[in-house]
Structure formats: C-alpha cells, structure tokens
Length: 294
Image (tube, rainbow, N blue to C red; front, side, top):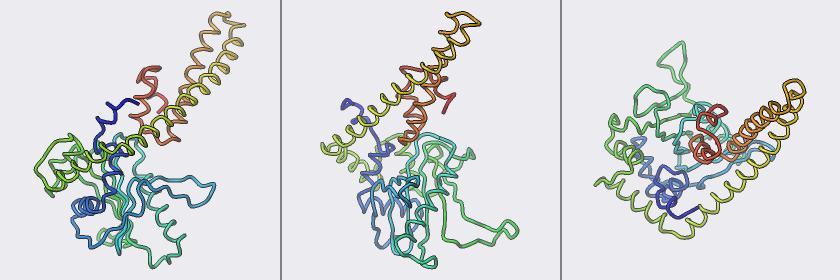
C-alpha cells in the first residue's frame, strides 16, 4: 500500500477512529457530547476489542469498548450501509453482557449497556440525526422494561439537525473532514494528525492491509480455480449437447461467477464492508457484478 492512501485516511476510517478514541480524554468528551451526559471517570477497556464467549463461537470485534462506574459503552463507526445494523447492535449488546457475566458479574450488577453507531448514511431513512431505541411495553406505551440497554444510531448526513452543537460539529467533521474552531473537533483533528505521523502505526496499518490483500489474492485464486473447474466441467458436459465452444464459454462464465461469490464470502469473514469489497474487486469485476452477490 502506498503512503498516499495512509495520508488520505480520515476519522471515518475505523483504524484511525480507534486510535484517536484511544485517547481517554477525547473518548470521554465524545461520549459526553453524543449522550449529553457528564462522566467522572472513563476507562477504555480495549481498542478494537475482540470478544470470544467460547472457543468455537463466532467472535465480535468492537471498535471502542469503554466503561465508567455505571455504564458500558461501545462506539462503532460505519461507512457503508450493509443493512444489518439492528441485528448487529443486538448481537453486540448480548455479547458484551455475556462477557461481563463471564467475569463473575451477577445479573443484578450488570451495568447499563449502550451501543452507539455513528453512520455515514441514514440507517433508517427518516432524515433524523439520531435514532434512539429502548425496550418498551407494546400495550402500555409509557412503560419501559428498564433492562439497562440502549441502542443509538447517529446519521452524519443530517448533522445540521442535531440539537447539540458539539454533536453537530462532530457529525459534520466525520462527513466532510472540515476544519472548525470547535474545541473538541480541533482536539480530534490534532490527534488524527498525530496518529498519521506515527510511523509505527502507519506500518501496523499497512501490514494489516497487506495481510488482507494476501488473503484476498488467495481467496481470488482459490475461488477462480474452483469456479473455473466446476464451470468448465459443467461447460464440457453441456458442450456434448450444445457444442464444445459454447460449453467452454458457459463454463468460464460460471467459473468466474463462482469465483466472485467465494471471494465475497471470504472478504465478509475478514470483516470488510461493501465499500471496501467493491473497491478491491472493481478491477476484475464490474460494480453491478459485485453487488449482485453482496
């Protein structure tokens, strides 16, 4: 990966976001602004924490997982809409609670669990800057379950509708990477520059990108080989009836499609979002072909 890609990264990149939010003071101020609360002391449990409940269970990677005396917070940055945020937020919330219980907590002692997604798109297409979800009784509208869970989704596209000026500035910064006189944004922007000036982190990011590329290439090769083999076999079989030439063409086409499907499947397992998958595959396939299997 060339340096230009690293230099072009902004706060909306999950690696940069995680590094910046690793700063306790910035993380604390961002949470305070987003939730309109005051936090006495915030502990960042782990940057891009991966939680495994069982050795053979699916793991979940959290961008920023932090706690204060009474609450647990998970903040995620989401660039592309993969249409799975409601179920993902449910899964994240459950896995965090299970992790807490696994450490010896009793049910009664579970902290309030707040999941925050900052999205560079409107996750529910209602034009709001913020969507907050809690568990309520369907029969009695003002009766809340009070189970201590909350899911909040911010929409950078509607930054101008945010009631809190700090939130408005943060969402606008994430949307446009614009400079501002806002103290929090100035602090964040300075931290972004510090992260990008750090050679060790640049190498780490580039190494992670290289690993993803190598896994991509392997997946592409395996997918094409399997796809071409399966497709050619089908093509030759059909070729007995349609002719060898038509059979090969159909086999190659089907092989390419199977290779693409396998690649996308492996990419998703690596945690790449739709935007990243399209970007990496666009030289080999059209965007229409890629989106067909996303």
